[in-house]
Image (cartoon, rainbow, N blue to C red; front, top):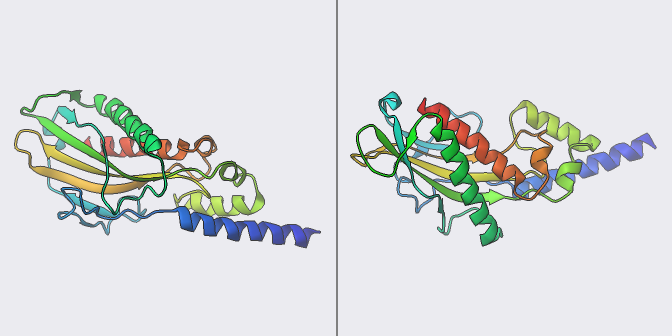
Length: 220
């Protein structure tokens, strides 16, 4: 009996690993992003969350205002939305706009006009993966899923059947339009974030929250 249960658990683990492998996406330097020609592989990023980056020796403390442009939904052929609906893309883009504005407001004055001491930030939503309904949550409690998610949690990796969000960030000096920093990133919740496994876009929105925090940390 125990052997049968173990085999069923192993079978589910292997099946889920296949599903995760099929659903998972890896960011690319999206060809139709203006800064793509500047970005290079970021070998210092062991997590894989920010695989491509361009950076300069910018003094972020010299800036106290920011223009946050409306989030762009990427339409290039190398997008990574899969079969996600336009409605879900728009919902996710609107959420990004709100959450990034909220985070940036804690450090900058949000303005609309260019001027000294002002950054201009452009966010481009380039891809997203929805949660796998029901199974994504159940995998947190199944024995085989617990093993997989435990390993992923230890390495800050993606949970089983969990969604994610992929986007680009471009930061300019608002006065000169000089590109100061650019990167593409993949964000997702912690492997054992049960709340983020419920609802098709819950993991993607949790990833947006983490990404907004990461951007603010960079600019401090």
